[in-house]
Amino acid sequence: MSETIALEISRKKPASLARWPVQDIIELYETPLLDLLYKAQTVHRQHHEANAVQLSSLLSIKTGGCPEDCSYCPQSSRYDTEVEKERLLELEEVLAAAREAQAGGAQRFCMGAAWRSPKAHHIDAVAEMVRAVKAMGLETCVTLGMLKDGQAEQLKQAGLDYYNHNLDSSPEFYTRIITTRTYQDRLDTLERVRNAGIHVCCGGIVGMGESRRDRAGLVAQLANMDPYPESVPINNLVKVGGTPLADTPDIDPLEFVRTIAVARITMPKAVVRLSAGRQAMSDSTQALCFMAGAGSIFYGDKLLTTGNPEFTADQALFERLGLHPISGPSWHA
Ligand code: SAM
Ligand code: DTB
Ligand code: SF4
Image (cartoon, helix red, strand yellow):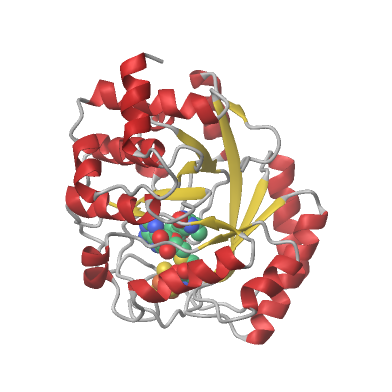
């Protein structure tokens, strides 16, 4: 790496208490694309294996019927989408899916539930799932909504590695997409997860009609957490018929790539995840996301309720780009 870039990067966040002002993040966004990609890939290689991508598989263990009003979400009971409310899956159903994911090459198994906030018996059931999936040798992640005191600890005891809970957007734009829970509610759950010793997986969605300042505002919120999340999913909005955001205009793919790069540079040790939205993305845009420092994808033909590229398509993409699945745990503190 050139000395100028090394200096510039270290000047931005010299000590653990240094903060990223939103304006500095906007300036990063405004960098010429090739400089930004060069900088992001340089930071990436200082902390992560080059050309290696971590593979996680997702399973919706409790689908639909959610009381929250997240404008992007097909699982909200407030919108007329094709998603039907289902029961919580049985342990055996979850394990069958985990075995399939592992056989396909996934290293982490993520289980999602369409709850505002899990009840005590939900946590008991999910803890059993976590224990059993962990015993298979997979890393575990769950996303269950807001947690109450003691619930994160119970999941940690069961062997949970990561809890996913997204901030979704800047505090300002957030109030335009969700009214049933506050930004502070989310920060409180993230603190419970952190205090329980579970790795934090927290990111957001791009392409909901937000401004670049909002995207920078989201990244600032994440990068200024102390410590910042170990795992940062960047989702491109999947537009689902019946949701309020179904007809949102497409975001420029290069703006999505820039968001990955800016997350990469501001949170050097985090694994930045190229998450939802890959099905509508060209191979070339995905290649630029990897160049920008994305180090993980969801692997398998389904996200929670929407589609994701087929295993074979991703294998072909990896072959074309000379990428390989990462070996071993993806977070080195
Ligand atoms: N109900 C829990 C919650 O909201 O915390 C967990 C499941 S929820 C589906 C997990 C995350 O998926 C959301 O926070 C959001 O960031 C993302 N998500 C949901 N619908 C999406 C969509 N249509 N496009 C992109 N990301 C989406
Ligand atoms: C995250 O940030 N993205 C994943 C995961 N966390 C749980 C979810 C994406 C959901 C996309 C819409 C769906 O399939 O329902
Ligand atoms: Fe419910 Fe989560 Fe969907 Fe919001 S994102 S409606 S909380 S399932």
